[in-house]
Length: 327
Ligand code: GLU
Image (cartoon, rainbow, N blue to C red; front, side, top):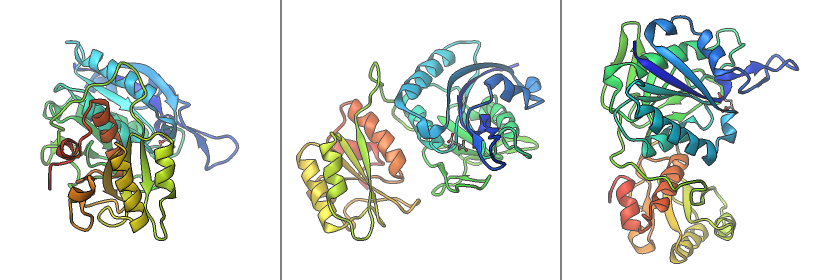
């Protein structure tokens, strides 16, 4: 039988209801062993080992846990007796951890992130089935060499496109630009197409922190205050969660252009939730030294930009190559 290692970090999948209210709950109360025990049938699919890496809600996910995960996954996947790794994770920032791991973990063996929208103690908890389906994906030969995958609610997503789209729905994870990479069906794991595998694996520094990159959310009536605040806080990069195709008010664009002149890398993304941000359409990127985020939303663009700056990739041309090229 294949051997899958589960690295548990917490989140709703490991959540227990809060005794103070029916609706409230505390993330990360259930251990990895208990999660596995709640999914009968797992033992028929794979030999499972578990390690508790963290016990947090993913709103508290951080670079220390990211570095621990990356190092542990590298070590595990290098072993002949490990066939894949699962990471259990809260859903709030799951997409950021998925992209981070996609960008720093190399090799062909599957890395699968899985979470749940309902706590483990809820009626119709979705965690046990999601866990079983994630193990099915991690053991599927066709899941190899696709980078980091995300499995929830019968769907398989690639790390680059997947995003949490609803605060409440069980079907919260979507890939708005490209659609899911595949499904887990009663007849097994089916991929529709190749999940986008990042061509480059970035090197991590020996320890956190990664370079500081701020996200600035654009809105009507915007001025330059938040951008100047980010510069003053020491940002090495700024991601604009712009309106429309990555735009912002004149004062904000002017402040971003000043930031470029001060050596800060500026990437324009969009707050819309889908669609590419392309160069030079409304904003003169060539003249101002900006980078267009292509299909990376603000949160993902931030992760990629942190890794680029950490790897010494800071010129607009080189950063743009990592964000889909000069489109
Ligand atoms: N905020 C918690 C987290 O992201 C719970 C949300 C969830 O896991 O669905 O860990």
